[in-house]
Amino acid sequence: MTTRIKNLLSIFTMGLFFTIAIASSASHKTYKDAANWIPPGFNPNSGTLLIETHPLKTKQNDRMIEFLQKNYPYPYEVVVSSAINSKEGKYADTKKYPFAVVWEGKSSLVASPNGGTGRAMPEYNMYGNFVDRTTGKEYPTTKKINNYGQIGYVPFFNSITQQFK
Image (cartoon, rainbow, N blue to C red; front, side, top):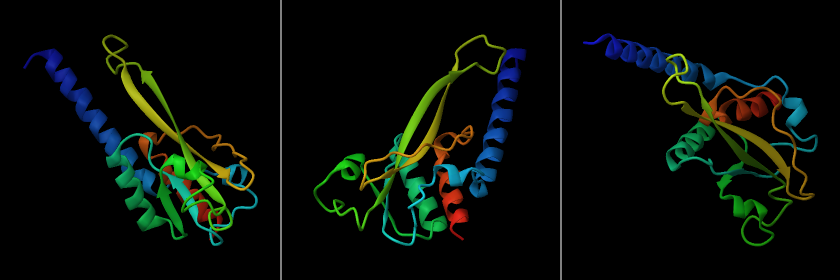
């Protein structure tokens, strides 16, 4: 093999191990500043939380739902954003569905691992925030840097669960 192929293979292998390590360690992560972005009137035991579908892909949405089923013990429903914003239909009752979580995704390009030459690699970070459906008030996202990419929902919901133990 040429040196270039060996280097690319090494970089790929290191990246794969790094990704696996981050993904496996993220399952129990939380944000320490949850009190700053969980609304003061939010109680996961009263009402059903509406959660916007994952903004990236159906596969990621399925993974998010699987995570919620295993780790989020409170009532919720995963719905499209138009259902969250609608004043009519199944989810119009703001007493039953007082809060929603909406997602914001930020895509960026990071330098390639080979010292900045070649193509930049895409990176996607997902941030969630609460919306009070009664007043329309949007609460801030966590102020921490999201190092969880497409699975930013994991520390988000772990933080809520920990806050209400």
